[in-house]
Image (cartoon, rainbow, N blue to C red; front, side):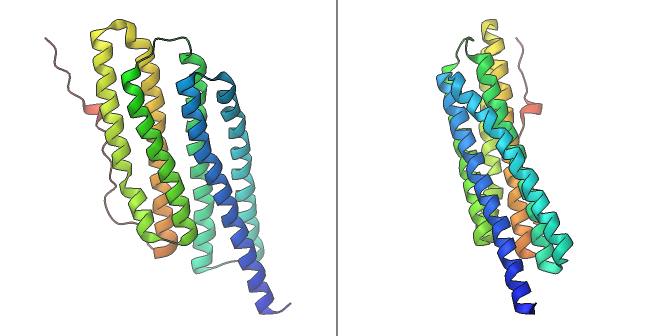
Length: 237
């Protein structure tokens, strides 16, 4: 077998691996769209669809890992190619975790269906999900196009998700302090918001991996983290 044929076959396998990451990313992004609709409309069937689709995402993660390990064992890649394949395994794992958080949102639908609604907070939840969906889409695009600048842009947007979470945290805390009837629904919304915020962290991890694949070095800047919910001051009368 000629060297050119071997290289062509390896490139084909690598492109197939990347294509599977794209499919996985698109499915994860759609999970957030459906989870939000299910949450807002209290749609039990759609929530169940999200939960079932998560199993497909888990399987995709497993298959991508197997595919990547097979390539490493068979092709013995080095340098840039090895960095690309190993990082792709981590990207797949990150997408799987982001998908888990969408599943957690769907699971909450079953719980909050009959609870008192806090409508004021829904706008912030919408914004958080919108941010996550765009981060997923853009980081996958950065991965495929090898766009370092776009990866950095996604990395920087994690702070916007944190700011939305902090705003929601303070708002819900006020609700709970002013009216005990809101404690249960507000607590559920806090769990939902925290899951979305954590999804943003994993999208940021993926952005760092995309940067590493293409730059050959770690992103050296301090991570743009702004979750201050652990340090909220409460004034007591």
